[in-house]
Amino acid sequence: MADIFLCDESKDFFFDDDLDDSSSGPVDFDQQSIDDDEAFASMVERESCYFPREDYLFRFRFGDLNFAARTDAFDWIFKAHSYYSFGPLSFCLAVNYLDRFLSTRELPSGKAWAVQLLAVACLSIAAKLEETSVPQSVEFQVEDPKFVFEAKTIKRMELMVLDTLNWKMNAVTPCSFIDYSLKKLCDYHNDNFYLSSSSNVVNRSMQLISSIIRGIDFLEFKPSEIAAAVAISVTAEIQSLDIDKACSCFIHLDKGRVKRCVDMIKENTMNNRNENVNDEANTPSPFESAPQSQ
Image (cartoon, rainbow, N blue to C red):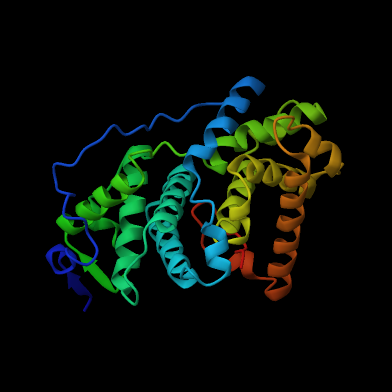
């Protein structure tokens, strides 16, 4: 039987005493659409407000942060998100909240319940902001979880996440840029927006995004760079493409960084296919199956 964890048992160890049920703040949640280069440039300028701490990736690579804990939290978000068939934006938002939280606060060492509780809170907040039909917080604990939390415990964790992130929840993620990036390449190819209108192309783009943000290697790139690289990679899968010229389409981004991200996506995809040629067909996904980055 799953364990029941009560918030009072961790109050002095994990939760802040100044976080109570009356805590509130101005939550920004309206997602801005990108219609032209000017709007894109504005979004690129704003995306830095939603980055994890600058040393986040460094601390993972040198063992100061628990990579396994992040992976466990990500996989739990992935599973619960798939269970409810939520949209891609809520998935990317939840992962953004997870990374920003972990870059700022340290989870209790050796406490597996804390990882699951944080994942529940991140997805619950993201779903409330983005989804039209949202289950009760306790219903996010799907498929026989190891721990089962009471609603008041989840709510307290949600408040802790909101407070830690300064109530800045309208995060800019790769999903924020993907439509614009695909349309930009459509203009480049003059193909009547086939790329951006095709559900297969959009789904494949979301597959790539969901797979590469699982690992830590792509944390070095900005969401706008990831979206551009994903759009280029997906386009290159279905038609010939001059990668260098395609990278140059995104005039507000560093061409070299976009190209390096494209190369990493290609290498990551090839490595996963070599490890298991059936991985893509057998891996569940919020958008469809996708190879996972290491």
